[in-house]
Image 1 (cartoon, rainbow, N blue to C red):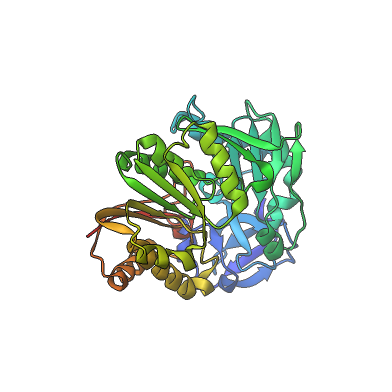
Image 2: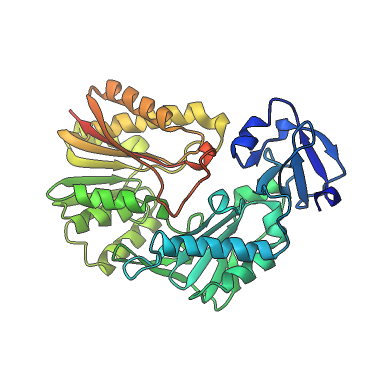
Length: 399
């Protein structure tokens, strides 16, 4: 059946990563084309000798023209593939991860390449799913995808959240809207027993950062009796974890007043506001004066937004990580702890650790790495796909 679709022949020297399991075909790897593939069309990828490597949807304007959907030349890749793969993702989370469960009804349901659906991200919020379609091929098959998601057991509403970056890179247009089921204005769910009720209008990406769930649980374990500073707190998830863990005092910082207002409501919803203070500030500007004024904390959490969307931003991002961590380290009590994170796929674990080491030198603090964590298990990745392991969360002892 593969003879009926266009073929992309890879250049010599560009096959090994694909053969080893990497799911992305970069533009510079493509040599000859057989046929005239159109945007979103299914294409076959072969090596320089014509041997089958896989099939995927074609994105002619992208730096990644093909993200492999299947390596089996005999697999049927009509609309039924979405039903099979989505059900497989549901089964994995239920059977292996025990999701959903009574205390956790919010989690990542479909994680693109990790669930063999590249270009598709789905988060579950109890009875609501939020969806991002990140490639032209997925966008063109949106109705089949939405139908398959609406059929998942327990789901009432499916909401598409438009990605501006995907639309710009893949050249399609879409809007954020409820696409199946009744309209919803809030995302209601539980995470490790904490109740969250988020306005859909404030959703970032697919709504909430479920990838940090296990890292928030670790912060709760570290929190008892400690004074905690949560930088770039978003909706206060780390702060609430520390509060429930028994921190003596928590200060949560963000520069968005709208997010801080919602964070206050989430703390109130969970009756955790007693030892929790929210502060509006720009951490690039305000941390140094706080340190100069003598502020110190036993546990500082630094979780900035993505600083390196692609490799071309890598150097500037590393400089920013170094500066932010140096400023944060000055606020840590000697013998205290720093939890610092990077969610930039272009920044490797080693990159982050070197940046923090440089920050320690700059701040005059001696660091020891205690733990290094990544995104949760509901964000699986192929083993050969380093770009998919985008989240690092490092725990340091600060002397």
